[in-house]
Each structure stands twice: as structure tokens, then as C-alpha cells.
Length: 457
Image 1 (tube, rainbow, N blue to C red):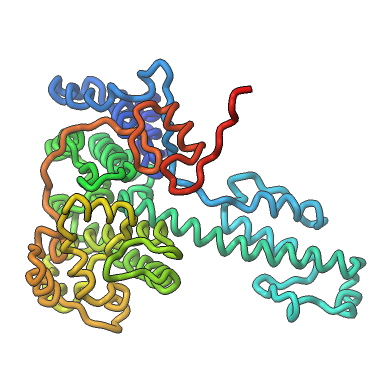
Image 2 (image 1 turned 90 degrees about the vertical axis):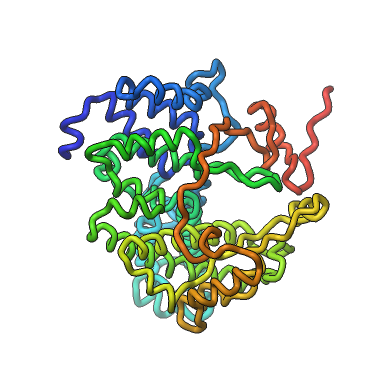
């Protein structure tokens, strides 16, 4: 048991555990605010309690029918449950795996390797023509399987290896989606998170705000840093033992990084640079196979827009953190020689048309994106992108390179008023959560053929 747990009462620990779990989920800010109210309770000043109540008052716990149509976590990859179940029917050496283990790549790989020994299959050698054992080789190993029975088992293991590769890719894509939304929040350990309650409260609430779904609009999305987040951040600033290490994982600002020790800054700098390299690889892979129109960044048939946008978000988040830490360490001169650009997200065709009809000016960031080298080519050293190049490109297209985030960490933005979380169906707001759930199931606003409801008999 850690020192944190030994000094914490049961109710407080339960609330903190719930908040910690929310870092890798997608809970509504109102519900996170209600848990924060339960955690901080009497420690809140009357004015702070009133601000928090603006959000907590809309929590599901306070509704007669506590229901939301919105999923409360990021979509998880489909595990290998079906394949494992089939293997248990065919292989004597197979053993059952529970649902969680069927979604764990390490457990699935160990399973494939273990049962593969039964038919002499080497993991990774799955070519049906070249890697199967011959009839004589099977006899030498004492196998009593028919050719058809052997082939059936070989094919299943080959499919399981392909499934394992897809599972690894989908888990990585899910992690990048979370990272693009809320930084390294989901990687905070329990002990790190629980070390300071004010920092934990801010990290959990701000993460929930960052995880809000995009709305179908041309007016811009909600700003994550609202009045509730500002109040919780102010509590961190007043606290004697504020957990700035926790805050720094979710809120990449110079004033936050400046409160870390030099060792902590260096550790985060290395961590974020490693993330940049990982994300750059996925960006390049997605770009290569998607045929994206760089000049417009409007989605076309064949574009993997979900993967691209999630990965671009992860790149921009990692880049913001990396740049902010360079400034905090006094190493910003590095940017004079090496400054990969931001990655632009793809925009839906109907939203682009809406912008044109409304007479909205084109996004000037798009012009800068088109002028600078692709960021993964800069990171690999194949092309050069420097601070002067970025500043010149921004100036030519009427952008302030510093305020637009192309060359410097972002400062505190304007504090947004709290706004209730909307019930969305593919980005369209629907007032009633039960109606939203029905419309989603019927395919409304999805761009796909709608499901026909049965006519009353």
C-alpha cells in the first residue's frame, strides 16, 4: 500500500479512483465535476462551489433518468474472442482467455505461439504455400491429423496472426486519439495522480473538456479551458504542494512547465519527442495510402479521415508540448534550425461547402501547411524546416507565427463560460438523449442510408 492510500479515507479514495479512471474514458464534464464536488467538498470556498455547481448540476447522478446517448469511453478495438473460442474447439493445447485478455496483444500472441506448437507452426511464418509442413514432416512429428484437419488449424492460426497485427494497430490508433485530445493524461499512474487532489481535480476536469466531441458547425468548437477549469487551476496555483507534474501531462503551458524541476522537464521533453517520432510514422503511413488532397484537405473517397485526424491531433499536441518544454528549459534556440510544422486535419466536404456558402475566409493555416515541408520528412531529416522558414510562411499568409501556435507555445486563452455538454448525433445537436440514441441507431446525419423503422401494424 502506498503512502497516499494510507492517509486517504475510503470516500476520498473512491472519488479519486473514479477521476483517475476518467482520464482514459470519455465522461461528460458534468459528471466529472460532480465527482470533484464529492472529493473536495468543504475544502471549496463558497464562490468556488458556485462555479463548480454550474457544471455538476447537470450530472447524470442528479437526473431522474440518468441517461446519455453518448459513449462514455473511446471505442475499443474488437478482440480475438471469436478466434480464441474456435481455437479451443480445434486444439487440445488451447486454453480459454477472458474478454480482457482477448484484447491484450501480449496474451493473444502467447496463445498463438502455445497452440501453434501442436501442429509445428512457427509464429510469423503463415504463408499457406511455403510454410506448411509436408505430409512426411507431419508423420515424423507424430501428428495423426488429416491433411484437411491440419490445413484448417494452420489457416486459423494464420488468421489469428493477422488479427493480432490489426489489434496492435487499432490499440495504437486509440492511444493516439486519446493523446491528441488530452495529452499524456491516460499515462498518469495512480500514485502520480493521487499525490495532490487539486491537481487531480483539474487534470480530470480539463481532460473531460478536451475529450468533448466535435460539433457540426463553422463557428469553431468549444474551448476546453472554461470557467470551471480556470477555478480549479487557480486552486493549484494557491496550493502549497500542487502536483504540477500531473498538470503538465494535460495542460502544455509555459507557466506550468516552469514549475517543474529540471529533471522533470527533461523527462517530459524526452517522452514527447519519442511520441513525435511514433506519430510521424503513422502520419506518413496514413498519408501514403490515403491519397489526401493537400491543397484543400477536403475529405475525398478513399481517405482514411478518422485515422488521419486522430493522428494529426496527436502530432499537434505532442508538438505543442515539445516546443513548450524547449522554452521552459531555455533551449528554444534549437527551433532556429529544426521546427517541424503543424499537421492540418481533413475537413468534411459538406462543412467546406458550408464555409463557402457563408462567405468564410479560407483558413490561412492551410496555406502555411502547403508551403512548408511535410512534418514527418523534417523529423526524418529528409527535408529542412527552420524557424525563419515558418515565420516567413506565416507572414506571407497574414498569420502571426507566435499567436497561431506555429513557432511558440500557446499562452492562456480567454476563459470560456461553462456550456452544457450537447447530445450529438454525428455532430448534430439533439435536445433529448433518448431521441439522440434512436436517431443514431436509425442512421440519421451519418451520410449513410437510413434504417427504415417498421411501420405500425
